[in-house]
Length: 476
Image (cartoon, rainbow, N blue to C red; front, side):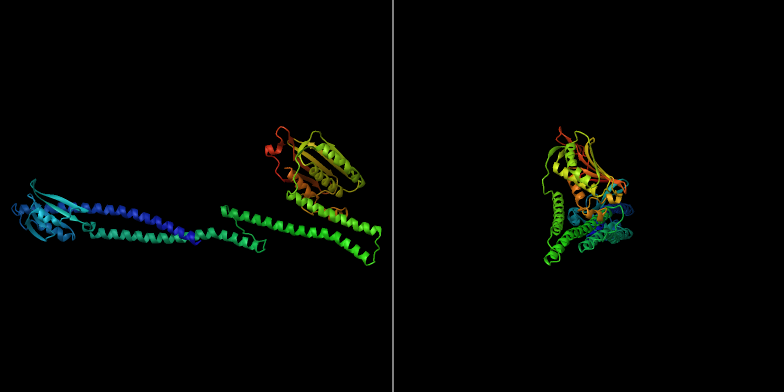
């Protein structure tokens, strides 16, 4: 703030100094010109007075004739005056202070060879040249009137005062400007410090349309995202701890009871422990698989895939599982739906959607799997007639450990990370997942992956710039 304030003052000072300098040169030239005009007028007046005195004295050079020249010396202190006759003889020299009669070359030694102000006027009588008057001075002040000098001095004093006032005003304006400029920056700095110290709710609260206000709003949005991520991280940590704790506690309680002799190590008890161990293993494997997908730890295969044939085989392997759950599985496909990607990943994503549909569809419901051929995208649709979901829930379905029905999900062995895995797989294939549904009417998940174009050897959507990576669309 100090630097900005001083910059304003310095700019004002430099501007005014340049203006005063230019004005001083202009006015100095004006006053010099004015003084030269006065010197010429004075020389002409002196020549006229001497001419009249010469006539009055009977056309002779007498001391009375040069009185007019001495009057000039007395009127303008610091002004030199030399009067010569037509033969060049000096009749008056102010440097000697008296009437003289000697050679011009001798007495003009005191006349400066160059002067900033000098004027010569010829003395004539009835048109005849009888002599000349030379007046000179080394400064303009000698030919300025007292009023002129006062006006000049007051003008320079006014410019000096204006300079001081302008610098003072520029300093005040610069301070106000700097304060208004720095205040929002300080607000952003204080907010950043508060967030650094752990207060994730801190916000700048800036408003307006200027660049700093937009920066403040962007910073607040970033802080909100950080807070949301931290809350999600806390929820994730809690959920992971809970999911791991549940099977571990069951295993620990059963094993300790058998060790203490409370339970006998029967086959049923051992099967119970084995079931919890498998559940724990599935959870750890799912988390590890999701982490590897997010970190791109496993390279993705690039192979041409017929989606219809791929999903057809998957549906056949899941048919018994779906039927055992009291549900009906239907499969519809279009031919020649070709993409390029990792077949194992696509199979896993579709299997996760089918498993999710089974868990959330009551007995007697129907699960339909479709493979469709769009203009530039291949669609894999998994639709169920289950409990459905609201638009708010549709925005949360890909979060880790999120469940629309936690009790049902846990009973049936759901881990809450399957849909997060689906999203990561689709992201890696430059596609997105569309979610549609209504409460009590079922849900429909659609995986959209760019079609493969053999002529270009890359997905069509990438060629046309269509299909944002990782985009999730939710419809009511």
